[in-house]
Image (cartoon, rainbow, N blue to C red; front, side, top):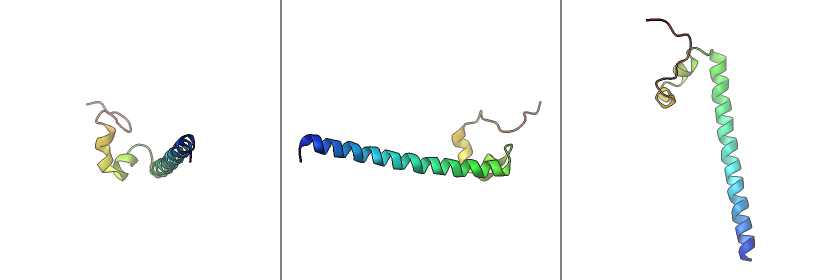
Length: 68
């Protein structure tokens, strides 16, 4: 094979791998958002995924804000 053919095959393989990774992540995000929307928006995410709450940040707040 010529160098150009090898490069083209490598680029195509990289593109296909990236496309597969994108589709898997998209399907997982769609599944998570579907579960959250079925539970309700106020407490669903922190109830369903308590370990991921730290990753979303402390300033993010779901639901109404009550005065102190």
